Amino acid sequence: MTLISQEKGSTKDLNSIHQPVLVEQVMEYLQPQNLGSYIDATVGLGGHAKTILDQSGPTGKILAIDQDQEALKQSVQRLSEYEKRMIFHHGNFSEIKNIATLNGFEASDGILADLGVSSMQLSEASRGFSFQNEGPLDMRMDSSSRLKAKEVVNNYPENELASLIYKYGEETHSRRIAREIVKARPLNSTKGLANAVVRATQRKKRGRIHPATQTFQAIRIIVNDELNVLNQFLKNAVELLKPGGRVAVISFHSLEDRIVKTTFKTMTGYCTCPPKFPKCLCGQVKIIKLLTRKPVVAKDIEKNKNPRSRSAKLRVAEKL
Ligand SMILES: C[S@@+](CC[C@H](N)C(=O)[O-])C[C@H]1O[C@@H](n2cnc3c(N)ncnc32)[C@H](O)[C@@H]1O
Image (cartoon, rainbow, N blue to C red):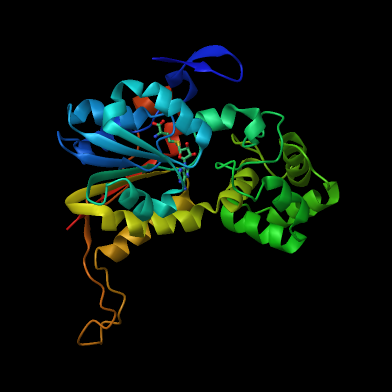
């Protein structure tokens, strides 16, 4: 399938722009069925959604959500042949309960969230996600939201910047990096930021990944409030499932995966009351059962074909 890229006027194969990860494994868990009602909370370019619709048969339907208008526009185009079985909604998945209620998807058989950014977002220099391309310091997935990377980089106090880069980038050189960023202000471009990080970590960082990887991850998490919205999504998504319905989440770094793991664990009725109490005091109720004791990862063949899949972790739970 092809699409016309409006900005550049070129025709591109969508799979060359974004290759979905762990598709086979997600389908094994979601088991799309005729008459099934599914929510793809991060439809992106529609790779997973298309497979769900193909496998569910002619009466399966999807509510497709994305906070990126451009991604949504492209998936509408890509999935036009399924338009009678799809509803597209621009919004943040933290609002999934309202969005589902508004669109008649309050009782779902399966919900998928494939977190993070798409290859399309990364490769579009003007979005400012990548240190490989010269672009503005933006990093917003939702271009209508207010906070841009530029504000974080240029206005946050050095101490706050250092602790956020440490917390959200798990970056051990965060103090040194924050100091160099403050010295280099005002910063206006992705390359300018990446160069400041490289200067700060010269001789300290050797390895396969670019020295600015963790700093860019941290700033992107702040700009899009990624961890808070994930927490809200998980709690709300489970409420929308029918008994026996499943929620599948693909994460790409340890901070996200930890949230998915611990939130699911809490909902399985895992109790933290001290054992000496004769009765559980916390009142934890079992809401779900875990279907993946350990996260599902990509097979070597997929890892070789699609480098993005190397860090992907899939966790799935079923509503009781
Ligand atoms: C990895 S891509 C999804 C790719 C998709 N599964 C496919 O097959 O093409 C992640 C998408 O999720 C969107 N996204 C990330 N966080 C979101 C959120 N909190 N709410 C809604 N969409 C979000 C991004 O804009 C991006 O388009």
